[in-house]
Amino acid sequence: MRILIIEDETPAADRLKKMILDLEPNGEIINNLVSIASSVTWLKENPAPDLIFMDIHLSDGDSFQIFNELEVTSPVVFVTAYDQYALEAFKVNSIDYLLKPVKKEDLARAIEKYKQRTGSNMQQMMDLLKQMNIVPSKKEIQKRIVIRYGDTIKMVEISDVAYFYTEDKINFLCTKGNLRYPIDQNLDELESIVDDTIFFRINRQYIININAIDKMLAWSKSRVKVILKPVCDQETIVSTERSPHFKEWLTGLKS
Image (cartoon, rainbow, N blue to C red):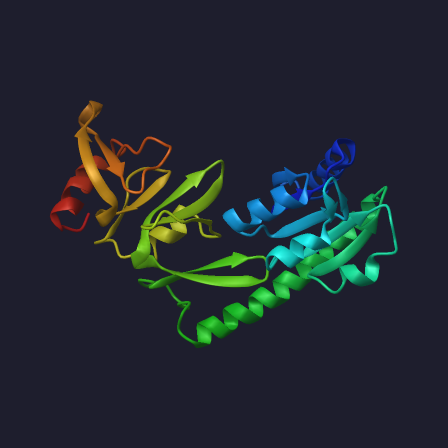
């Protein structure tokens, strides 16, 4: 669960982070924003988080202004010291309204409400997509990958993916246009659904599209260093055990 906190009081933000991670040890606090301006900028430039915890009174105004600047697709839990904004909160994408100081049982209820809501919505959407033959019901070459942004579903053509990768235990895809999205599938699962004449897993962290190879360099221990486009931050070196199969794959032979 990728969680964004919008809170300008450091002690309140730190306390909320600790309580969330106590309840959701596998959760990730992806950022703590402190103003309307920074929140609008961040939400425009980054994939939508799974859940947002948002204070109402921020340093530069009421956080409801964020919803006037852009469409917020993620579920929101408002956290505030004031109870008079509850009605306004539920006019936007709010699933709960917690009063400060937040009690752990109230926070747990809000997180459970999120899980019930998204679990139900996602299952309905996935069933619908399966009926449309967008999601395969068995292992086969898959044409599209489904990405979730809160309650929003986005589809990316797998042929448009430059590479899949893992960073800090999170799985991502990067498109040929250098758009990066977190994905639910791990690399083992992805290996079973992509076209292995186009995609190759060069090591534990990367599956690459042959069309994303910009340059190749001879490396130590008979390995190959691959320079990708778009450029990535990590070194992409074909592992020793995969190098012979990689060279066969380059020629069009199945590894």
